[in-house]
Length: 480
Image (tube, rainbow, N blue to C red; front, side):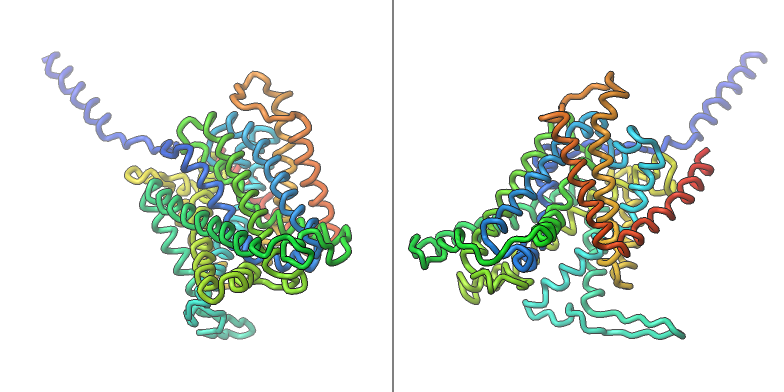
């Protein structure tokens, strides 16, 4: 009798244990190698900016040498940030990047405010803007349905809403690329890598054949090559500052690999190399491309020309070259959209895992190993921003906040060296403490100048972040 009771007891325990739900996976699986991380750095930056920014910069910085020096200086500035983030990333190789670094150095409130602004404006707003840029890049191919002309108009009392074909195209591109990334990490990365190879190869060919075509005329005083040394206008400090801000905007996204460090195999070795080499590659491509622009177009033609890349291609290679260049712009817009959808979702995922965002956003698909819930939420917000418009203005507001958070993240390096010297540092930032402090100081300067020059945007950004404070305490109460 005792044996039977004992047997029944064991059977009951076994049944209860079998009925327990499986533990929810909360860590992302390392699946990315050095090539994937390196391409992610390039892909997150290399979008349409390099094809459109230079003409606007030429109005503020008309002389060729200072103009090219601005692009080089922007690359050096970005490299300072990459070296700084490399030390932090090897210390904390987790999803979320700056969110994690700020949490460990300044506490959860600072980290939450970064993640709050990143999710609502920077990540989703940037994705919406990239989708819009992709739609505009299709217009030269005869896709009139992707133009900004309104298709639908809604009116409800004082509210007015119009939806254009370009907005619908942006929405469709966001949904499709998000779906590719939700299929699986490897699928999204393969698509991203393919697009990086295509656009880097395309821009490299443009640079190579462009330099060959221009330099055929030699180096006489009247040749295009002599244009590099001829000043074409006075350089003012405000003009140089405006041009430099445009360059920094074009380099934005370089920290993508740090946000996906948890998914990188051997991140303590791979992350510094991917960040450093990725930024150096981008700097070389950007400076060389702008040399071709300057050689192909006189400064008077560059000033204010939005499609300066297409204009240079048309001047050098005719209508066929212009069409091929338009295709390169489309591939670049699609690739940059793919890369940003991939890495931006890791920030809300990290917040949800800490209990400071909707908990369902920490879910990882057991089959695809992708944070599908975070990808879906990001897609939905980006779609709304693409349909309602105004996302570009919102994105400009948070550039003000990003410079502040970048400065704080750079200061985290000396703070953590002092407060947590025992944590292993597989990579120590070269030139410490000058490099991180210089990066922090430059970002702080830009932060102050931007606030003075654009007080309305600064106040709007501060308002968005201020809304994050009560939200933080709400999630703090829920998590406790």
